Structure formats: C-alpha cells, structure tokens
Amino acid sequence: MKNYTAIDLFCGAGGLTCGLEQAGFRVLAGVELLDIAAETYRHNHKRTLLLEDDICNLSPAEVMSALGLKPGELSLLAGCPPCQGFSSLRTRNKKSSVDDRRNDLVFEFVRWVKVFLPKCVMLENVPALAKDIRMTSAIAQLEDLGYRIGDSNLRIDDISDYGIPQRRKRMIFTASRFGAVEQPKPAEAKTTVKEAIAWLPKAGYSGDPLHDLPDNRSEKVNKMISLVPKDGGSRSDLPLEYWLECHKRYPNGFRDVYGRMSWNDVSPTITGGCHNPSKGRFLHPEENRAITLREAALLQTFPKDYYFSLRRGKDSAALMIGNALPPDFIRQQGEVILKHLESLN
Image 1 (tube, helix red, strand yellow):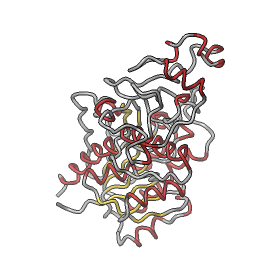
Image 2 (image 1 turned 120 degrees about the vertical axis):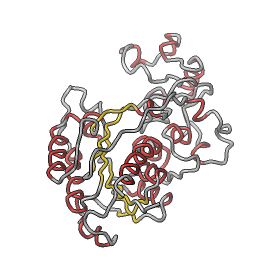
Image 3 (image 1 turned 60 degrees about the vertical axis):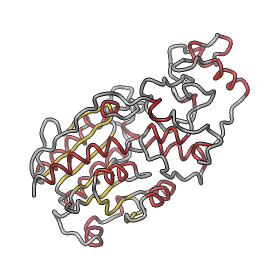
Image 4 (image 1 turned 90 degrees about the vertical axis):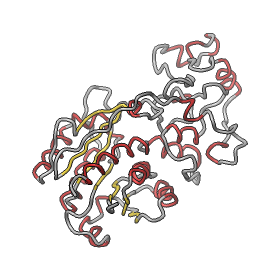
C-alpha cells in the first residue's frame, strides 16, 4: 500500500490523529499549544513530530522542509481550530460570529494549505462555523488554489448516525485538488451506551486511573443522585424537596442536568464537564455516580487504553476528552479520503 501522509493542526489530545492512523494515514506532525494536551498527545503518538507552539508563530515552509516534503506531496492536511468562540452557548443570541480571536484561526489553516498544497484537506468544527463569513472566505481561497468543492463537501453531521455512541453535531469539510471526495455511508444502526461501556469492570477497582478516580460530592447531592430513576431518569422525576434552589427558580432550564444516560440509547454530547452531573446528563445509567473519565473516553470512541494525563487533575483530563474529536468518526472520514487518493494512482 502506498504511504499516505497527513498533518494534524490543532491536534489537542490526539483524537483526529488517532482516527487518521486507524484509517491508514501516517501522521507526520501535529501542532498543539496547550502543554497538558501536548503531553497526552506525545504519550500516545510517539512517532509523530509534535510542534508545541502557537500555530501563528510557526512557519509552514520551515515545517515542510523539516519533514522533507515539497509542495503538493502531502496527502492530507487536517485540523480542528479551537471552536469555543463558535460554541452554542456563545452564539445563543442567534449571531454565529462572536468577537473571539480563536474564530480567526481558520485562516491559519488556510495559510498552511497555501504552502503545503496538500492533495486533500479536512476541516472539522462546530456547526456554527459553517454559516460564518470566515468559512465562506476560507472556501473561496481554497477554490482559488484549485480545490474542488461540491455541495456535499461542507455538511453538518450527527456523529450518532455513523455508529458513534453519542449525540453530537459537527461541521465537516473536505476537499481535494483532484475531484470530489465522497462522504461516509451512515451506519445501519446506532451504537448504544450499553455497547460502549457496560463491559467495563466496576469503577474504583479496575486498576485504570481514568476509571478509578472517585467522586467527591456532598451528602445531599449523593442522596439526590440515588433518587434519580435508573436508565434515563431526570432531576424532574425527583420529589420537590430534593430540587436545588436554582432548579426551583428555573424549572424548565437545563433539564438534562443530574439526568441519567439510557443504556439503549446514545449518550448526550460528551463535553468538558462530562464528569460532573451538574453540567448535563452525565449520570451512569445504573450506578449512583457520574460516568468515569474512561467511560467518557469510550463514548468518544478512544481506544480502551488511550492515555490522558492526570497531572492537572480530573477537570483538566475531562476537558481534553470533551474537546477531542471522536476517533472513529474521523476514521470513517479518513477512509473515504484514502479511497479517493487511491483512485488517483
């Protein structure tokens, strides 16, 4: 098989790299600014050159030279620029564009494309970016570089349609200089929470640090959790005496908090608060606890032994997991790009 190469910009803890490697790409380099994410990435992807710096400070021409590449030789340039500026909470006022420096990082992606001229590009992000003027400008610049962009190249996917055990909408953009890139075919059936995590040993006794970190909650909150009905119950099912004051004041707000996942459904979107039941429907379907970090990582489709640094504690690791791209979703995108590249030979 021919050697297909990729670079992962804004690589975080490595979800995109993991998925591309599963698809068959050799990821030559990754770029990541945050040290804890870089530590996690380096531990899992030891053979990939990691550039731990602000992407704005890096010269793509110097990186290309260091990798021994010439313009047009790289198979795929991929990335997910930090998207907090486009998050649903930041754009709830119906404006898709927010005054946030991170929103302009899509143009850093384009800057690297202009130098490397990769055969294919893949950009992943939150849905709001798709309608923003920055994305329109980026696409126009890529078209000027000769990338073929059809109607299906920019789309919003719910990853649960592709067998990921999680409800999560993402923007995915792919393009090639050599014709149309197909999109993956949806899965025939959803993958459930039960299929993803029910096989794990009991939390606290597994020997896996991500699965054994204990919860630390007040007696009142533990009692409230114990009363939430198993397998999909919600805080609204609790007697009023156990409602928190904020829930009494706003009974229809954030209804998923302190809710349980359902065994036979997909999970809600795994976020950086995935270990905290006050942040969403993150209670285990049966046990009186929030899901563990390992369970969250499995719902994100990371391999069962994927390493996440706990050097900065549980919150930091949860944020890396919640911010990551689900590897199996990326694997499926990568496979259709690989098929396209193989058709060129």
